[in-house]
Every structure is written in C-alpha cells, then in structure tokens.
Image 1 (cartoon, rainbow, N blue to C red):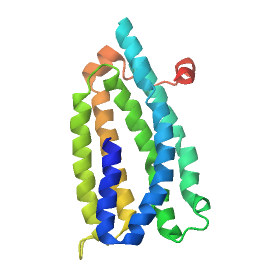
Image 2: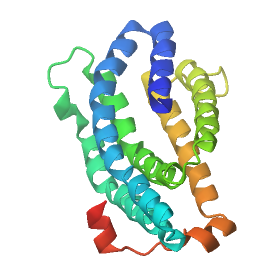
Image 3: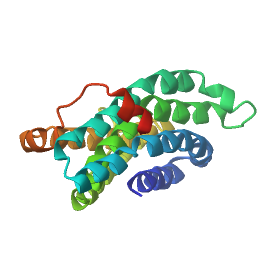
Image 4: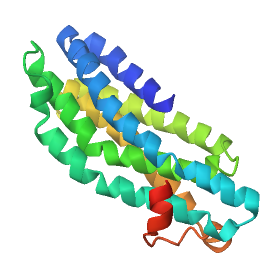
Length: 210
C-alpha cells in the first residue's frame, strides 16, 4: 500500500505537469512495478521463515532467512539493470516511448532496493511487530511527496526540472529511505544478539526454501 500510494502521488503531480508524462507513467508504471512487485513477493518470503523460527523459539536463526533474501535482492541487479538499459524493447510502438523508457529505466535500476525492503520488512512482520512499518511507510511517502514536488517541477537556480524522470527518482528515494532505515534497525545490537541478524552468510538450504 505504501508503494501504491507513492505511485499514485507520482501520477497526481505528473497530471499537473504534463498529460503526456502522466500517460507515460501509467503505461510504464504498470509493467515496471509488475516486475518489481513480482520479485518483491519472493523476497517477502523471509517473513514466513521468521515467523516459523519465532513460533519454535529458535530466535537465533531468525536473521538467516532475511539475509538470504537480501542476497537475492543484490543478485537481482543482474536482471534489473539490463532490463533498465534495454527497456525500450517493451515499448516498440508507443507514442510516449521516450518518456516511458525513462520512467521504466529508473524504476528497474532501483528495484533491488524495493526487494531488499520487503526482505527486511519480513523480519518485523514475522515477529508481529508491524506498527513500526506503518510509521516508516508514512515517513517514506512524505519524502516522496517532497522529492516529487522538487524534482518534477524543479527549483529555479537550484534543481533542474526533470518531469517524469523526477517522479521515478522521487519514488526510488522513498524506497531507498525505507530500506536503509529497516537495515539500520535490523542490525541493532539487541537484534544481533537475540535474533542473529548478523548471520549474513549465504545458506543454500534456506535460500532454496525461500
């Protein structure tokens, strides 16, 4: 819901910027977020295993599945960066092709941060600690609103007008913000000691299960 709200805000701002930019963001957004969301569902599987370990009292293992999905998120750069670079193949005959490619490209390049975000969120969801995620999502959306306003329309003499590229970057910044905050909390000393969140090594059996 937090991500969907960011996308909605992008479109609200773009509707005031340019009808062509709005149409391009809608067309490219459906495809780009389908890719990101699909992979994000995979990395969200960390919450299933965190919940299982939590229920079984195996607290020291709860960091392991999260790290497996973080590694998967990092590996996804090998998919998303080429998809972003050659994204124009997905819009061969569109009248908004140039703007669609720009939006698609930036969402793809930053998509692995979204994957890492869902992996890290699984650590909190699996333990039933979800209120923190709600406040974080609100904060990220506020950041997205500010970034959209500044980057889409620009600030004379300070920030160039970016249009649809600014919308994609603003949403990506909001996602990166959530990911970094989640990582910071995930690596807190009390979590490292109790839940083994420092167990960063690749564990193939758990990776395959996830």
